[in-house]
Length: 387
Ligand SMILES: [Zn+2]
Image (cartoon, protein in one colour):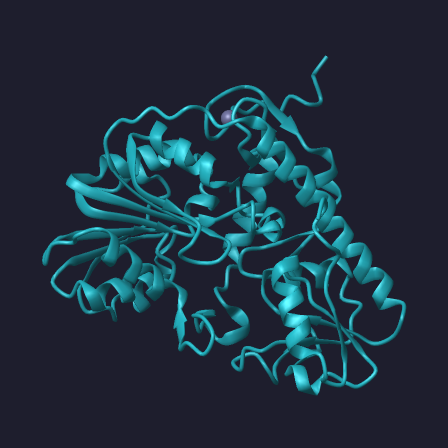
């Protein structure tokens, strides 16, 4: 007899065989990391030894990520313009990767010349940022295909793109190895970070940026994200990969973990598993309640969804497209449509309609308060369980 709870895979963080399937997850619709609705049916597990939350990289998942990446369009609703983060009240808008690049430059002393490789470099948003502050460095990229090469070649000190899917196959040594929103996609994160560490020159650094599952509940339904790290599980994985943390923090970008490490063995205690189980169960329960509220609202009259990124498109798929419009504050999206549903500015949402704001409770409460007074009724998702 096969044990239905046995995933057949070891934990991606600690290697233990104690993965416990979270069957309630399978009923949740999903979304792709390029913000397209994706059907339910995924597999999620939590490690009973270290609490790491992870998908199972079985044949179904491998097949799904091949289909997702085969049709991948980064930022398709804004013609490839990078999503903008608003830096504080009244602060000027700054693309996310430039904020991260600035943080790295402030945190570690980077010499005037050196070599950098960005693993999972996408269309080069981070490399372009690094190019501005490190004009004398040689910049390299790594991606699954060379579709991004024309964009990378416009970066002044870009040298080469390695189109390999295994970090072990990357040649050379580097003073900085970055993985910005790429490690969570990797089918084998521990061996990937171990291989990245082996690419370092003496005194070189690895820089990792991933979503923080403890503050980023919608990350769980991103179909092509295998790993859902907390600060503790990422730090633990990095230590097992031979990195000593220079910094590990959740305070650089909202809902994300920023880690910088140098080569060097540290042995950290294995994280307590209870935190992972608590986070996974609370998140699955809350995501289901977000859908339930949307279904109730859709019966009450015209309904719009706030946002056309991960959470907005996930909810759109969960409602099988049965909404009337989207609302977005991103000017590059307003005036467009998705599958015939117009994308409106908040003040243009029709009077008498409801706009559901599927953001984390802390953020949605602020958005709802800020937009009250426009014609439509703006509604937040249910409170976080336990609040
Ligand atoms: Zn584990």
